[in-house]
Length: 406
Image (spheres, rainbow, N blue to C red):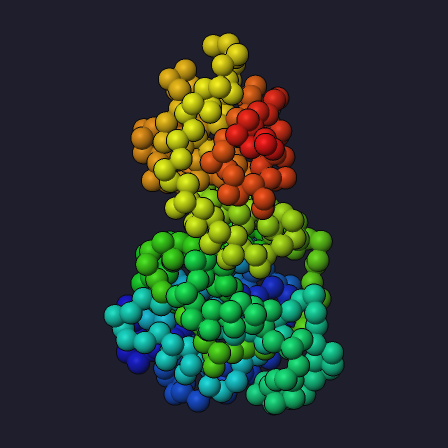
């Protein structure tokens, strides 16, 4: 039951970062909306430091709740869900420990949601969230200057800008212009309506290492019809802190594999390939290029091409086809079929998967021959090395007569 007057529930997951938590709670205690209009829920993922005492010290300044869950490893998704279950407001605001906010923070997040009938996910700007390009001198200034003063000092320094700043500029700060806006929803600073949160099931607790779980949540919101908007005014400043670089990178790669396994489609396949190559920002352009080629290639029938490629195979040979198109020879009805165009797949009655061929669910060396068709032509210049690597992973032989140089 929503408490009368409560507009926002701010959920802050934390683990052994008591000093950083002080700065986050200090900013929330300075909000210029009435204290009765919001609450703060700190979810402790098993800390052994003074986190509980820090929360207690703010009991007179905030409507604050504290929940502790046993340390069973990295469980930030479970922590956020635990906080959401305690939330009393219509709007859930997610903020990382160490994110410092100014007095207008919640006012801007609430305003960005528009009317109560609109379904929006608000991407809050995150100053200094540039882990690989830290702002010189910022660590020494945090805690000495109020967050809004930090903006006065560093606002013109590009190393202080959100690492997503270029992506925001490219779409004119209008995320509705993007094909994959959900990759910009990072839980370091974001908000969503509670009804939309629970309609998609909250954060997926299968993600138990660092990274990607917030994007996966964003993908489900996007499919649910939620509109993504960015709030520059609802900013936070990410306080510099130590990071487990190797562990985070490993977790990111593991989790993008989980995202692909849960949502097998070309847009996540592209993300899997990029993140495993330590890339990220080409995702929007690469997916747009795929959408364009999908339209252009829709009428391409490659049945004769496939028949020619497999004419010498025996009935016991196992075959996979990347770019199967709308029909294949009758002899390949039991083949593993893949195509990037979802509109063509219903013709196979569930026997074909939507994929480019960058990463398929097939086990290593599970087929004898992989056929790559000319339907991949428009993607070949960008993805040929990745497609060939995948074909060689799953097949003992690769045939690509429609892609051979002429």
